[in-house]
Structure formats: structure tokens, C-alpha cells
Length: 389
Ligand SMILES: Cc1ncc(COP(=O)(O)O)c(C=O)c1O
Image (cartoon, rainbow, N blue to C red; front, side, top):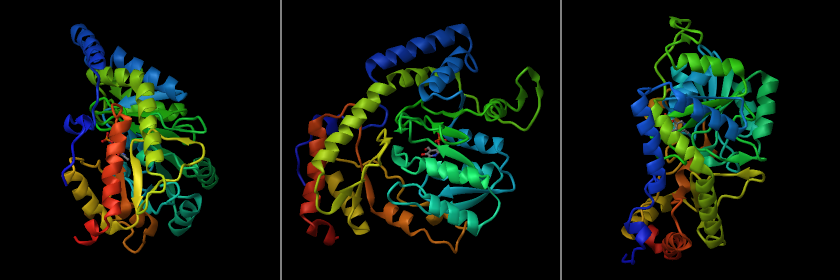
């Protein structure tokens, strides 16, 4: 396929990290201040980052850590899940499940509702009935979408004495009914890995309204230290601290998050319009009340067999499609082959095998969206393209 490439394709503006020159200057200025002060970790930038993130999320506490995996693990440890079971959707990144295992829990997987990309209350209730002693349920805001039944999930968990935790690694700035992750659960765990909507290069953070969870995570990230006496270690801990330099990056990214979200939502709106009525592929139906950050713009192909040929077709047109969320669900990953081998997960299997993500970036223009859509349209209009392979 020969296609004139737009500048945005050839200049690689779909690269995950998109910092403007202005932002880089702001970050460097904060880093210089930190380097000159000699406070390289656990200093004023961490405090400001945590204060700002909590305020933006309208949550009482934010505790920064060194990764999203640590944020989840520390939260689950705060909930004392060791020796008990933790329920995790099968369509997530391995880190969600590894965090539960590292916190000493036994893993139980649950299927998803394709309408929300998260387990439905009925699916969670069935899992609670199938296996006893579930300490926690981790709901994952996959692709930045907060499912329409988040409040019902919270109510169900409360009724059964199960702690609900949100994996918000994809959901910086995503809202449901105007509220942020953490609002409905015991705590929400964010990742600031380099490809996320907001980054600190590497890093994570827990938001919670629960004072006990916040103080546990603060102590756990810092070798289980007594907050009032750093010479005393009161419980098992680790080093999961975030450095001042990472906090500098996080703080500036947080300041620019509103404009990034605005740009991403505009790109999604252009896609929504351009993909209307496209035969062979469907947009995700909007979830009432959810304002996603479009960490991923997801399209569902009519059949799983179309995906590899589409990716290949796009690549030959100069377009490399972003990775999905996720192509291989946990129950099909070798690392989790021992978990629930008799259980089936048909909805997650179907979603995972048929979806693709389209590029979303803050620097994208309408013409870039149109170009991506025309690659998709060309592929779909010539179905022999994928049947032949
Ligand atoms: C859904 C999900 N959970 C947890 C994580 C873990 O975050 P991190 O890579 O910062 O440890 C990620 C990050 O990739 C993720 O996508």
C-alpha cells in the first residue's frame, strides 16, 4: 500500500511521551532546584505533588510511590489480604494480579461485561458465591473507561464485606458522574509509567479517604518506619519511595493534565464522528455518566481473524497501531495457568481477541484522525485483504 504520509505519522508524534518544550523547561527548573537543594527524595516536591493530586481528585490523601504495581500491592497489604482471596478481572495487565500475589493473596479471576469492560455486579456476585473468603475486589478502569455500574459494584462489595480497590493505572482525569477514581472504593492506585496519560517516567500513587490506608502506605513505602520516629521500623516495609526528580515531572504533568484531557477528548470526538456507521467495526457504546480520558480509543472488529491483517495493513501504510488492553487475558497467560483452570471467561476472550486501539495524542489534528480512519476504511472496504491471509 502506498499512501502519502502525513507529517504526524512520519514525525512520530504518536510517541507515547509528548512533552512540549515549555513543559521540559518547567520540569528542568524544578529538577535544578531539587539538585541544588540536595533534597533528592522524600522532599517538598513529593509533598506538593501529593497535595495537588489529592486536591484535583477531591480525595483526603494521596501517597506517591515508585510504581503503579507498588501502589496496588501496598493498598492490598493495607487491607490485610494475605492468606485470603483477591478477585481480579481477567482482562487486565499482569501487574494487577502480581500485586495481589505479592501481597500474599490467592488470585481469583472474573469475566467482564462487554458493555463496561469491567465485571458486572452479577459476575462479581457469582464469583463471591463460587469461592469463599474474598477479601478484596480490584476493579480496573480499562482503557480509561469507568463502567456505568461502579456505584452498584461498591454497594455489592460493601454488602458482602469485600474491600473494593480501583486500579486507576489507565484513568488519570477520567470521571464518573463528575467524580474521580477513589471516590467509590477504599482506595485507587495510579501508575505514572511513561506511556500513561500522565507520567512521572516511572511512579505510582494511592488516593484514599481512609486515614489508616494512607498511613499504612506511607510507612510501607519507607521500610515500615514509624512516621514519628524514622529510627524505628514498626512493620514489614520496602523501598517504594518516589524521588524528587520523578515528582518534578509528575507535578508539571499534573498541571498540564486538563489541556491534555481536552485534546484527547477532542480526538475521540473526531473518531466518533468519522467512524459512524463503519461496516466491519464498531465503536464502543458511550457509558452514561463516564467522561473517559481516552487512554485508549477502542474499536471492536467484527471478527478476531481481522486483527492481525489490519495491523499489518496499517503498518504498511505507515501507521503503527497502539497496543490493546489486552490482547491476551490473564487466564491465557502462562504465568497464571494455575489460576482457576476450570473456569471460562467468554466475554473477556471475545473482547480481547477482537479489539484494536487507535492512536490518540494531544498533538493530533483532525486531518490525522481522518488519515487513521481512511486506513481503517480502506482495510474494511476490501475484505479480501484479510480473508486472503
Ligand atoms: C492496568 C494496570 N495496572 C497496573 C499497572 C502497573 O503500573 P506500573 O507499570 O507503574 O507498575 C499498569 C501499568 O502498566 C497497568 O496498565
